[in-house]
Each structure stands twice: as structure tokens, then as C-alpha cells.
Length: 78
Image 1 (cartoon, rainbow, N blue to C red):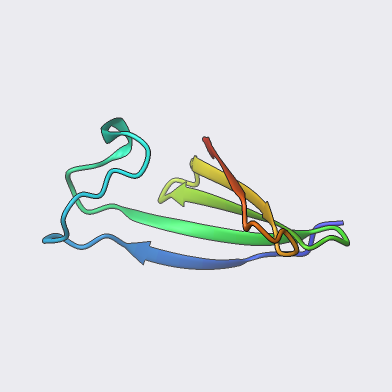
Image 2 (cartoon, rainbow, N blue to C red):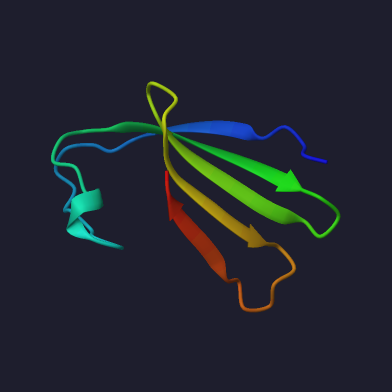
């Protein structure tokens, strides 16, 4: 059973240096507004994050568990 998640709009402001976490092809050169949605799924507190653009298109999805000792997360391209 999924609980409804909260939304947090974020805006990347000009003047910040580009940080390439995965690959440069995922970086943008202009200010970008995104929304991060977080949901808790099931009994094991499995967490699912969706990173959306202003049109509601999924950019990335991140899955993980609150109970995982290693705090391992899986990130997928949207």
C-alpha cells in the first residue's frame, strides 16, 4: 500500500557550479525547476523518490529502504 507523498519544488539557481554525479549528459546549463516526490511503500518502509520536471515528466526514480543498514539506493533514468 502506498501512502501519498509530499512535493517539494526546487530551483537550481544560476551561479552554482555543475556537479556531475552520474554523467555529464544528465547536467543542464540553464536554471531548471524540478519537483521531488517521496513516497513510503509497504511495511518495510521502502522509500521511492521521483524527480519530475515542470511538465510532470519523470527525470529520475530512486528506490531504497529506511531499514537498510548500508543505506543503499537504486537510481534509474526516467
